[in-house]
Image 1: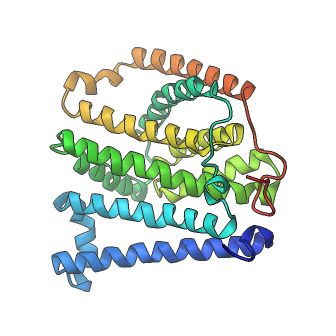
Image 2: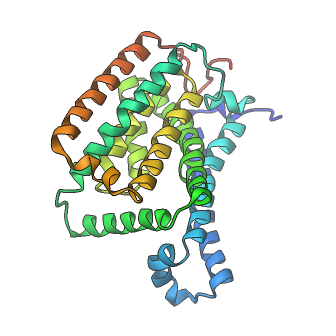
Amino acid sequence: MFKGYLYIRSKGFQLSVFLFIWAGFFLISQFLQLALIRQLYNVPAEDMADFLSSALLKHPDFMMFFNALFTLLAFGVPAFLFAYLAHPRPAGYLGLQPIRNLKQWPWILMLVVGMIPVLMTIGGYINTLNLGETAHELQQVRESQINAYLKDVGGWELLRNVLCLAVLPAFCEEALFRGVIQKFAFSYTKSISWTIVISALSFALMHMSVYDFLPIFLAGLLLAWVYQQTACLWLNIVVHFLFNGSQLVIAFYAARNESFSQAGQHAVYLVIATLACLLLLWLALVKLYHLRTPFTKRWGVEEPEKL
């Protein structure tokens, strides 16, 4: 469609365009939030901060809708728009292409089975630490938001939560952090190790949580590593979706079954389960490495390989 796609330009120019697109849609999402609040709830500008601090508890459906809209505008749209401008095949540019080795599938599923309990255990331990009053207050707000989404949840609400908090983030966040940012990171560093770290770090920082930073960073490392080994964003989307979705389902049943919610409080069982899951995780990583179908050396934002 274009006479010259962005991939023929310098990586610095491409990065400037990408940041401009991302910042623009991020600001649009914030403007839409304020506009919708004023339109629906007649909140004056001077009361906006108070409304936002309590909106989730009073209007969880609205906040769920806005969070989904934010995910789409801040992550999904910038990634796909940039890919559309960068390459004649935007889906392939983002890594949305067929799986090259079907033998990777069972090990991807085993990786998810192993990573979920391990990262949840790490997150639970970090929540017991004192990381400062500000971090604690931010974590309380985050936990109150999660509890608001899970409060009085039925079958429809659970499905809504899975769609908005698992399916949409998996698709949009992977497109941005792995499909675009990871490609930029490799173009600048030419190092797979640094590429994975940069992708994971940006992923963790964007979630803006002190207590959850390490689990999210570790999850980002795994996701970035999977993308480098498989060159297929669909597998990343599956891992991301199963990770988020499993946490929602676990929280759903934990809120309704006291024995289920207390299962993780037995130290001996928790240690045994964590060690078993670490073994599964290690085995999955080893197998995926041996079955790897990595990118070629031309992978990057400047004159990428033919898709």
